[in-house]
Length: 99
Image (cartoon, rainbow, N blue to C red; front, side, top):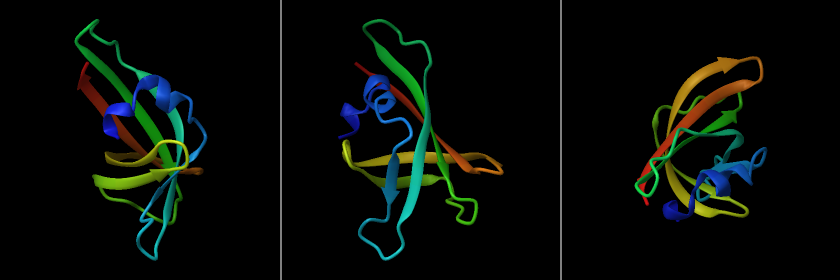
């Protein structure tokens, strides 16, 4: 599934929810709030990042999480907490992949 995550496929899902822990009793939702391209190298690599926002009351440590999305299905993504504000805790995923 990870190979189907591109700048375009994620941008089409802005402001939608990704769920973590679908198989457990504790489900965490992260909202995709930004997708940013980082200058692809033509014919070689695609580089972009995705910014997710989660609830203030639930901190997720840096790590790989299986995320479930209504349109994209299930995918494992490595996220890093990068900041916190009044709206929530923000997590970033960075993608660098060979085309």
